[in-house]
Length: 233
Image (tube, rainbow, N blue to C red; front, side, top):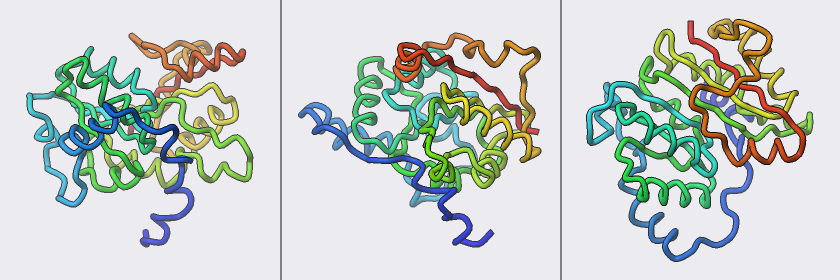
């Protein structure tokens, strides 16, 4: 794959704006002082064992792309202290919220990246991740923008490379067209098996699911959500 192909519109600009309202003083201070200590540095080679990124011993590595307000990531990190979590979020205000949650809950098993997730995926060693979560990603609802959806052939290739054999890709959305899009792309890719066992499985939230603000908004607006789990083969 050429550099140009890797940096096609299907591999970048999957997110919109980078910043919303001005940060409060405490948030700005956290961004200046806490983020540099937690941020993964892509300028240095990735360690062969990603567990070395964390101060305490971890047994699994889990990646969440676009963690939004951080509700899910913080919940999982507190729930699974033996798992090392890598969270990616380019939106400054959301990153500031996550830093506050890390401090409030004393989470030591979280590392962060505040830019394009494809850069991180390309940096990660092959077969190094146990699970990837892509939860309520931007659906880019207009058809002319569908090429900016994160689920794409080239990004599924990235997922397949970094996931361990048997690793999981979990996807949640309240947008029917994006759910169908993801099912079709994973089917056509050939490297992922949908784990649904019956017709209602995809309507059931993931185990110990904490809910997110995006999910709550969807329900208020009358939309149900789908929860898809794929296994890397």
